[in-house]
Length: 177
Image (cartoon, rainbow, N blue to C red; front, side, top):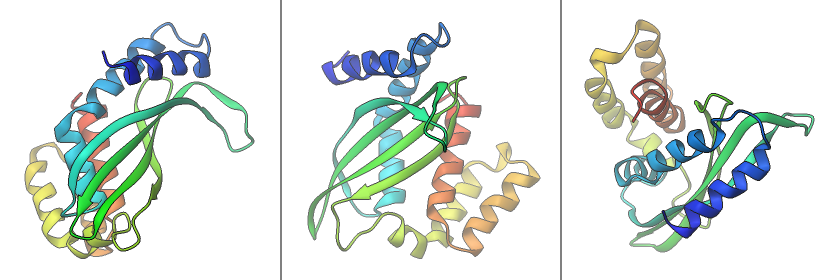
């Protein structure tokens, strides 16, 4: 286990508190899944199509607060930083992955980038027809009528962020990848 992942796991135990006994296992599962190169490549493609992943890593694991600022027991956030390059130069983008007390991914937010030209999701929204068709084909046997309607809505009203979130949640929460 890398030092960053060990430190991140330690931080979440402190941030989440004693909560459920499975907190450490839940966080480790999430770290393994989101450290994987295929997942990082998919997310980076949605964030910045055409970018080359030069590095991605979990830079923090923290607890989650409710809207009033109170800690939510068992919930945690993995903050990932993507380092990437394009013909415009090298940049970084940070993304927060929020998990509930059962370890299910429920939100992806706070996309912050150093890029000036290639803002998160902008180019992907322009290519959403192609990306959406690929997603529909790849997951056609696993999609409910509601899923098909949601994905089609992401295509009809360009929403690369929503489409990425749907795919990552399906893979992680439902398929266990």
